[in-house]
View 1 (tube, one colour):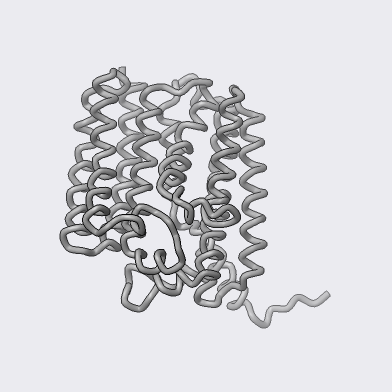
View 2 (cartoon, rainbow, N blue to C red):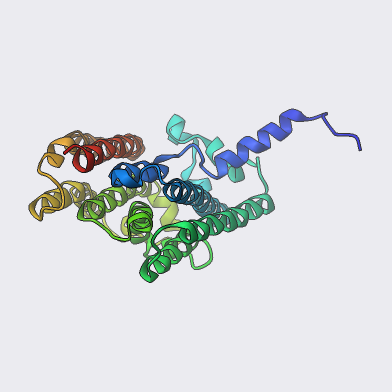
Length: 317
């Protein structure tokens, strides 16, 4: 059978479109496995079960995230909100190529097949990770199921993010990707991991919250219910300030309770300082997309600092 090689550019372009659709370049949530690995006792580091569990969890995490953003794009195309939010006025901070459905690079059918395929891969990998892990208490298996289902239903099916559940889902499901693999490998949730789960989820929530600030008009036009669409501009500024303080407050509480060492406050000081710059960009200067971009940088920096902190705290003495 002859192979058609007349249009290799088109195949390459379609592959890139799927990469854009699944947001595979957005690796921020995938850093969870590095944070967990650095927090593990040294005796677990090189166990075969540790490597297999973390690898399968990571692949599952990538797939479930790809399914979530794919279904979000399908809903955004259907209700017209993406067309309103991705306008020429957003400039280089929002590239239309990031939305292959909106640009026409992929069809609705192609995106649906990709999305459900990602669901199957994600669910299969997480189920296999749980089967191979040293520990799998009932509450953790239930949590894995709830996080996967909640992520997929974020803006598709039950459309939880359209019905007031966006912020809770964002901080909850994102934070749990730190807690769940650690519990699979150790059978417990340490105070330090609980703190880092809160931090990881809050950092992700802030990125999404500044996106919502920018997308306010489009989200309101399609009836999306979130904090941005329910509050006044002043109220939302107060909300952003409150979410920005979650990291600092939770770290202070963790230190006071003995869950984290006092020097964690110093370690994370760059993150706390950059939150001020983010508030200035988003609230004072009225540039939510610049604040969102800075939030991504803060999330990545924070993940690296947590890895360093875990190594020093768990293995330094």
